[in-house]
Image (cartoon, rainbow, N blue to C red):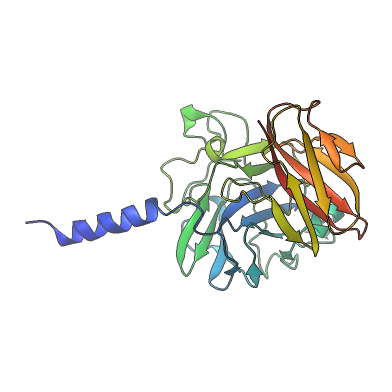
Length: 304
């Protein structure tokens, strides 16, 4: 006779472990920078806008597995868009034994929502490299950054011999780093991992890198025509063959076009609407399209 409890457990395990790609929000960027420059970016990979009611970001401090600090989300997030939430401490605070430094003004300007900067009021975004972060929907985890219940030391690392903790050294990956989810990742981690290997799903950028905040490139979103800030535009062909030209047309006047590699380095800048790819190499890039209305939009470009 089959055990009904075992069958139910397996069904729940499978449903949580094998959620569909591109079906719900997930963490797209993690920033643990100097001072309190900490932020979490959430991405909508679906084809529909999502009401953020019922979604919560939790911080499990220093290996805790209960009693997280929580930040409920609100508003609407459009298809292919992100929301950036972070620390809003705008002044230095003398805590006696040390000074808690204010966030960088550029970093602060890129936040969509933030805590007040009062640690005792809400400390969700006061993580420091060894805290697990979860994205929760209606009480269920839909993405986990780190491992809930594990204190890795100073940070999770790339050291396989220590289960990616810093027990044996290793390069810090979750402290003083900007981590961006790889474009091939299409869903969150719903089950608490046996070990958290940050290298598997994230690309590491240098400390205090903020120019990727506010957009995310994901294989779930392939559209080439968008309407951003009422500036409708088209990029074609996309993907484009190496050596061919790309064309950018828009309903508003374009002042300049910049091309960045995935690590955030500017590769090319032009005020022309036709750009040759002959000076580039095959791969994925980000187009920054600047309009005379002081609006900026980003777009994924693939060169084959």
